[in-house]
Structures are given as structure tokens and as C-alpha cells.
Length: 292
Image 1 (cartoon, rainbow, N blue to C red):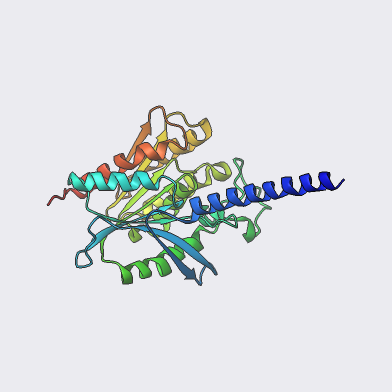
Image 2 (cartoon, rainbow, N blue to C red; image 1 turned 30 degrees about the horizontal axis):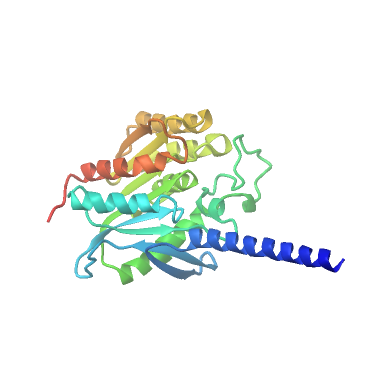
């Protein structure tokens, strides 16, 4: 019996060590980066939020730089870094400061933060029944956007040399957040990149709300880049085409918009393909290149 107990506890100990190792690895993958890691307490969210800051090579505080804010932390972050580095060397884009916002690790905050407040955060394809209207069921992208506008941006402006060239980018749920921000705070950023946006929530409510907002988006020049993997499923593809139709049919908005389909790419592959395309189109929109 003693031998069996010993084997049991050794096995249990090994399982615990492996589990702790896997958890630590997952935590570091989500909550640490190869760039500068920062933490800011948000009164609006009532929690500490991490963010990663990628500075240009040879960052000079006496100069000013564009700002790019991206969702989902480390996801595709190296692609952004490499593309920005190469394109800056080629004079296609300005050297930029990139800020990546990871999702919370110990609690599920991604849908809470990125799903618009008119869609259920426990996302569903079908239309929301009218009786399901408890405020607790909806996404809180409005609160997360307030965090970015009222807490994160002031912090970045106080600590880094920024200019007025600003981009917001997101993928999937982050893409729906980008569309929500464009619809509600259009002048907060100059460029909006939505890769494979999750516009299908609750019978494409994101498409419908975006379409309704377009007539009011006629005060300033804004750039929007939309992309989809050519191999994505019919539901995502249908809502994407709904966004394109809304932009095409509404002639009152002043948005300059471009879109692309990434051949051979599925949902998770599309952002990788889209980053250089979106940056190139955005700087074509701005009408300038930058060289030494």
C-alpha cells in the first residue's frame, strides 16, 4: 500500500507541476511581450490593464510619431512590428508607436470589452429575442472605448511624443470594436482597420447599426480598411458583404474605404495577410511617403 501511495503522490505531483508549467506558459504568452510592458489602473473598468508598447528603432523624444492601437495583445504583434520596420525603412510609412492591448488572463474579458453594447456578449448568430434585454447580457465596448479615450490616450500623450496620425486596428471581435468606435467616435482616430470583423452577431446587428451611422459620418475625412479571408465561412462572409453594401449604397458619408479578400486565407490567417495591405492603402490615402 505504501508503494501505491508513493506512486500516486509522485504522479499527482507531476501533474500539478505540468499544469503549473502550462498555465505559466499561457500567462506569459498572453501577458508579456518582447516590447515594453506597462500596467495602468482603470477607474472606468475598475481593474488594472496591461498594454505592450513597441517603440520605433532609435526612438527620439524630441520627434513626434504616429500611434497605432491594436486589440488582442500578442496576436499578430510580430507581424505588425516587422511590417512597420520594413515599411519605415522603405519610406512607405512613418516610424510609429504601436500599443497592443491584451485581454485579461484570469477572467474572460474579450467579448465583454470588444462586443458593441447592442449585441449579446455571449455571441449568437440568431436575432436577439425582444425579451432578452437585461443590460448585463450586452457587450461593454462603450466602457472599453471610454477607457481608451479618457485614460489610455492621456497616459500615452503624457509619456510619449505623439502626433495626430492615429490608427485603431482589430481582428474578429476586435473588428466589431473598430466599427463601433468609427460609428460613435469617428474623429478619435484617422485610420480604422477591421480584419475579418465579427459583424454577424445577433442576425448581423453590427451591420445594421453601422449602416445607420453612416449618414452622420460626413464631418471629416476618415479611412477605413476592411478585409476578409477568401476561405472564411458563409456567415462571416455574408455579414462582410453587408458592410460593403452599406458603404456603397450610402452616399452621404465621407469615409474613404478599401477592402480586400485574402486568397487562401481562413479567419485566423487573414490578419497576417492584411497588415501590409492596410498600411499601404492608408498611407496612399494620406498622400505622402517618408524617407530620410
